[in-house]
Length: 324
Ligand code: PBG
View 1 (cartoon, rainbow, N blue to C red):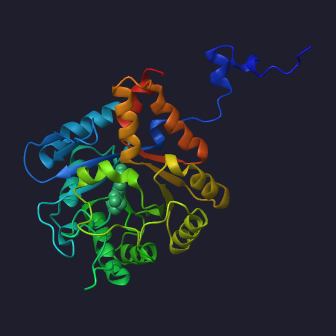
View 2 (cartoon, protein in one colour):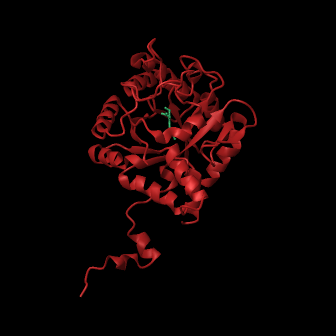
């Protein structure tokens, strides 16, 4: 006689829900927003269907929609009109992100505003820092700029800053700069294990941030390495990161799990543009059922992420409401 029957607990949705091990809710989600200069712009991003470039004056309607849907947090990316060698628009008082933060805070107190701290959208060469004459990203010089950017975001009212540059020592430098400026309560979410990934492809169009020459392999990590990811996380924790991130998410679930098992700190995972567009297009083409979205987001949580940054935030909000 068969006595062990795992199917007993799969008989209907009530019992299946009761024994579900992993849950996802809008509490876990951060939604990326792309802000451009100009007026009356809400323009779909070709490489990332369902995501838009917004000018400041069109942000209000978007923020209201997000609040309505139950999205609680956004991460901002700015695309400036002017780029230069040293990304000066990134820390300008009236820079695109600084204006967007103030606008969002004016429209709603309910949205938690995170900012991406990086230079690649603001530099004419598209690299995430200041270049030496030989075209190498000068780590320590870049730290001064990143710190200025973080402080200027905090001054504009950002709730949390998220450095994505992968320079050495940036978390410590930024923590010190924020503290000195009186922002001891602003947390840092560090893009700690950030890989040099082809899955950022669609984002480069969204943020106009492709490097003009070379690649990012001298600062972003080799996709083959997991122990190095753990070392990066360890450094960021030592330097004062409040949350550590693994990016991308789906091809790096093992890294998320390893970090979860090694450290006692909240973990974010960035479900990046390429991961989004692959599934989005496949669903649109009828190749995949829409439940693939939920399945992939749940896998990121199952791997150990507490927080997911995802372009699927609006789809997820709808699916959770429809109980899909
Ligand atoms: C900036 C940055 C990138 C992403 C987030 N911040 C691009 C890059 O590093 O090339 C990628 C996000 C995505 O693909 O969704 N450094």
